[in-house]
Length: 435
Image 1: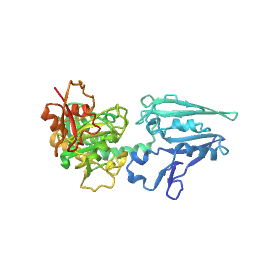
Image 2 (image 1 turned 180 degrees about the vertical axis):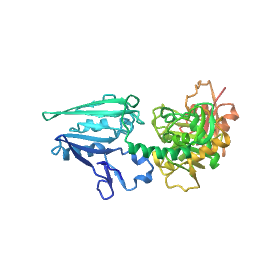
Image 3 (image 1 turned 135 degrees about the vertical axis):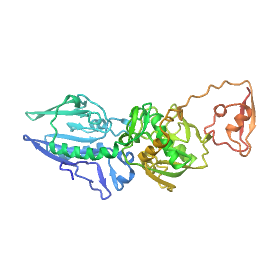
Image 4 (image 1 turned 120 degrees about the horizontal axis):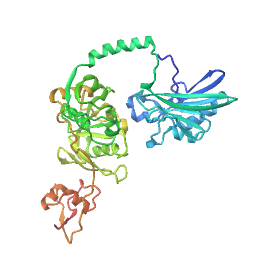
């Protein structure tokens, strides 16, 4: 068990009790500091759903107000130790807490990986973050004089700071690393190009590493299509030899591969979930294999996915597809609730093992951006002088009608102002622009 305090005030059990201690009071030099914790409610859908069964993540601002009321008469300085971040996608930020709640002197924040060199003042509250991956050391200085606190923040780049390592911890780390290196140093393949897993790319678009990973899953499962979230891809792979350690760095969560059945309508719903913030970054952004799709960012969220093709054919909303994904998404994580409760058709080992096996067998030469995911550009439709009418027959689909008349099906859909070009009915009239 940890020999330091862990606090969070907004996680509650089904018995309406806090899951862990909400706060801790410390006295340093005669000054009392009240430190309470705030955990992002995004944990419910950004971590594996199994991890939060029976837990409720309450509104951070509401709980922070309660904590200030409870602590203000007991302490001199109130500090929120938070994992909320500054990304306003879900409206659950440390900035919002500072705006909503008076009386918090300092918020030590995380989650959004922002680098705030001198912190950020919101009203009378200082918010600090130190970036990501231990690249910086955050320093907060509190000067207490005559009953008032002056708080300032700074960042020190780790390379420019000399800190003496704890010899016991250092020995423990070296022992673990030595044993670990024997397991992860073997080479599984090579790459002549950088395999792109950068956060700023995989959370908003197709990359060669995303394609390599989904191709590996498709090959291993034989499913109709593959979907995996960009937030699960955590690093790039540099040119040269590829070691097991690099694969684990890319896929550190130990996710397994699962195949479940989804209808075409549910497949589209899943793609819509991944594109709600496009072109902004989103961990749920959907990387695919066995299929292609377009995103129309001019449309409202929930109506952005167009021209979905599976195996070279238009997506059939009524058909059922075998969809391979990771166990996080399969349990409804990242908003992919359409997978939750579905039958497991296949369960494979870890995603990292699937990727390693594929690289060993096939190499990485096929890893490239192919246009599986593209921004939709509406075709320019010239208003024809005349149009003829075609009456839909049983078994017709729009792309076949278009081929019959020498017109792209996208143009037919645009010309007829179809909300869903993949759903036409016998007897329906389709206007064919005269060429």
